[in-house]
Picture 1 (cartoon, rainbow, N blue to C red):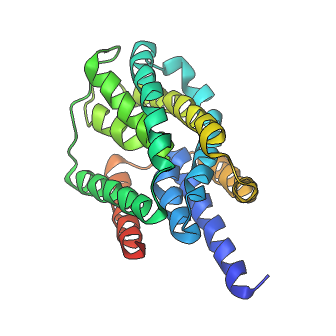
Picture 2: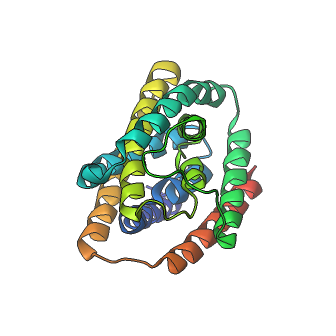
Amino acid sequence: MPADAFWMLVLVQAVVFGAALFQAVTGLGLALIAGPFLLLVLSDGGAVQISIILNLVTACILAPMLLPHCDRKLLVSLGTGGLVGIPPGILLFGSVDVSFLKAAIGAVLLALGILTIAGSGSHAATPGGTGRGSFAAGAIAGFMSSFMAMPGPPLAAYFGLSRSASPEVLRATVLVLFVLFYGASLGCHVLVQGIQPDVLKESLLLMPATLAGMAVGLVSGVKLNAQVTRIVLAAILMLSAIGLFAAV
């Protein structure tokens, strides 16, 4: 293996490890950190499929731990919307080139970074809430799940900074939704786009780093306060957006 390829592999593994650790500690990070980085490195739509696979694995690990705290009524409303939004997302994914994909994800990261810095967001529905708002948020999240492996931003915008539900309830609900959205998105990719052998190979190569990051984050018991998490996440989002725009 050439030296450049070796060190790039080490860098990718380190980024995925750190993103998975951040995911285990804060409940977010793998899709927002590793996904854009993989797209920069691979410069191919397969990066989205790899991100979906890795995120599905982490969600399946974390969700059962928090399942008893899930808001089931809100889960049904958001989940139904998500299943409606996933098919259009996969159709758009198959019709755009990688430059458009980089620009679209960069725009989402930039907007999310600005919102994170500002500390603003939409008001969340109360626990157990249903209706058009939650269905629409779920539909957008499902669309972004299959299109760019990022269902989190619409859900974060929906829940906002409201404390009408405990952070534990919100995190549990989101993680269960991730299992649903990423699982359905992966199924659509397999059926509509197909999964190339290289995607499966790269996913398997990155799986140990993903699982190791998750394990370290869970075992360490480290908890970051909201202010530190917001600063770190905002910096990562802005840098990722700049990198994606520069690579378009």
